[in-house]
Image (cartoon, rainbow, N blue to C red; front, side, top):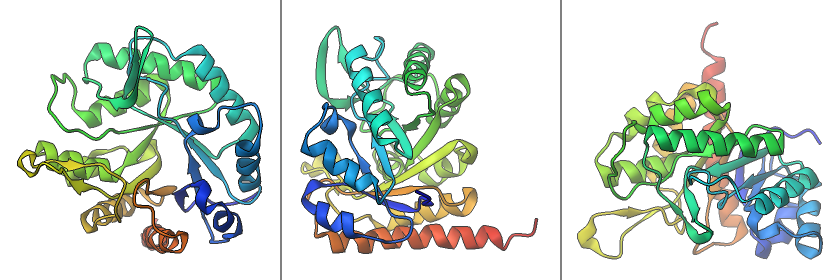
Length: 282
C-alpha cells in the first residue's frame, strides 16, 4: 500500500466504522500498543482491517526507557510481535520511566537529564530498536517542575539521537505547556531542534490546572488544539518541512467529523510548508 503520511488521528474503537470508511489523503492512525498486546481476537482483527486501508503508528507508553532497568522482556517480546504483525509506518515511545524494582506505575514519570540517565535511556532504547529492527522516535515530555538537570533538553535529545541512532517525535503541545510552566522560550526550543532527527510531530489540546493557584497548564488532550500551538507547528514545519503530524484527542472526544476538521487544519499546515520549501531557490 503506497500512502504518504500527512496528518493523522489517534484511533478510537468507537469511531471504527468512520475510520475504516475515511479516504482523506495522507490520513493515518495512531494506536497505543499496550491495548493490543494479545495473540488474537476482535481487537487485532479490527486493527488489521484498519491497516488494510490506512497506515498505522504504534505509540508506546510503558517501555520505561528512562528507568535504570532494561525493558521488561515479556512486554518487549509482545510489542515486537504486534509490530511484526501490523508493520506500522512509525513506532515511537516516551522519554519517561514507569517501572522500579518490579513495581509498575501507570504514568509517564519524569527523567532528570543527567549523564547517567542519558546512558540508561540510550542503552534501553538501543535494546528496543535492536529487538524491533527499526528506528524508534522518542517524544519530548511535558514538564511541570524543575528538576536537577545536567543537560538542556534539546542537547539531551540530540545526544540521545547520536548515541542510539533513534529519531525524535516533537510534541509541540508539550513544548508549549512546558514553556508556560517553567518559563522557557517555546520558539527558541522549536528553532533549536535538529530537523534531520524529527520523524514525527504531535499536536494536542491542553487546559489550565483545576487549582488556579498553581498557574500550571496540563497536557490533557481533552480540548481542541490552541492557537499558539498551531503557530508553533507552523514555525517548525516552515523550517524543517512537513513531517507526519498527529492530532491527539483522548478526553471529551468529539464526533469523528469534528476530528477530521481539526485534522484538516494540520494537513493544511503541512501543505503550506511543503509549498513554501518548494519555492525556495536551490
